[in-house]
Length: 196
Image (cartoon, rainbow, N blue to C red):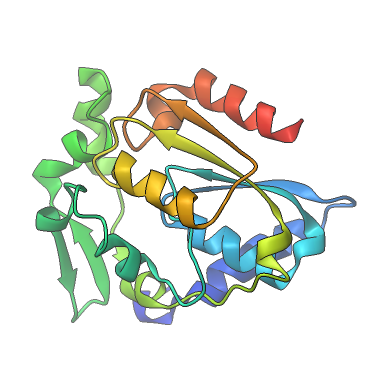
């Protein structure tokens, strides 16, 4: 699909489609930008969500987008390495910076492979404001998994977001932005804890 055909609503509806097959509320996990996606899911169908788990993720307020939140994160290191290709409608992270930005805590073999695993992102979903309300998204149980050496969404900004959108519980992993690659056991334990 062409990048200019991809929308935030499409991402949300893909998750809602998966949840339509569940017989009970689910634990829905969102990493990074997907924090905005799962917030949109909870706003649309709060009855389908038991708990939202934000993993090194954007935790939005009404009207926020990835762009608007990222612009407030003055400690993040990704900004100078992010280019927008308007002609193609994609956001591109500089190839040579990918390993250290995303897996600064990872072993050398992971860092060697990582640049080829990171995909360019369609721009439209990243700049689209999400609409959330206190009566829907606001009432859904939330847990935040902080990543304490993150260079993409800084630890300070993660804390700031949690301070303005309260969560029931938070856990901190000593990882960079990709704990599912650098501390999968710790992340699994954090998600399992959210299920309790």
